[in-house]
Structures are given as C-alpha cells and as structure tokens.
Image (cartoon, rainbow, N blue to C red; front, side):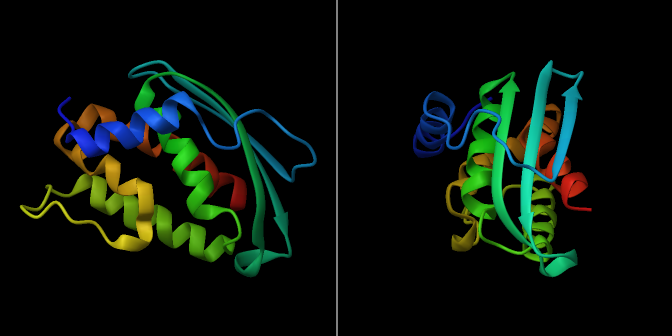
Length: 145
C-alpha cells in the first residue's frame, strides 16, 4: 500500500505511540471485534455521560492487535470522538466511511475537522484495508447504540 510520506508518518506515529491504549474501568459498553481478512482483533470499551444521542463520549479504552492501519485508526478515533456526543460520533463514522470508500480526489484533501484521520485517505485505493481502518469505528457504533 502506498501512502504519502506525510500520511505514513502520521499512521506510524499513532501505531508506535497509541493514544489511550489499554483497557480501563469504568465503562458502559465493551465490544470485541475480529477482522478475518488480516487478523485484526479489537476490544473496545466506551464510557458515556448522559443518555441517547446527546450522551457524551467520556472515555474510550482499547486493546488491539493487528496491522498498523487498524492500530493507528483506533488511536486517531479516540482523539476525534472523546468529548463529542454519540450523535456527533455517528456522523464522524459515516463521513469517514464514505470518504474511505470514495475514490481519492486529485487534491487529496479531506475536511480539516477530521484531523489525523486524513492520513487514511489513501486506504480507499486498497479495498481490503478499508475494513482495517473501519474496525474500531464499527465497534464504536455498536457500543454507542
């Protein structure tokens, strides 16, 4: 998979020094996911404050084994989602999933509010890797439902 040097650097930084890694308590939901395509395995814990779509994501902790894409993606996801409402997290998931499944535009630009998630834009060129990048997002969606 070919990534731009800048994107590769961001992914490797999150892979080498993941944010919020390790399972913590308390938590409201725990989800375990496995990606048979490349062997990624994720346990995700989410703690919420409040109820429904207005509930705030107070904390996310996780344990992940697998490729650098899946490990970096969950680190980036925690940065984007903690402090947002469940509804906002759902919107981010939908937006990132749509962008990953769309052809990479010539400019390669992603919306700036996606921060380090922009490093995953080149994944759309490799359909088998999209599942790696979205593994944590689908687990989060289930944990918040």
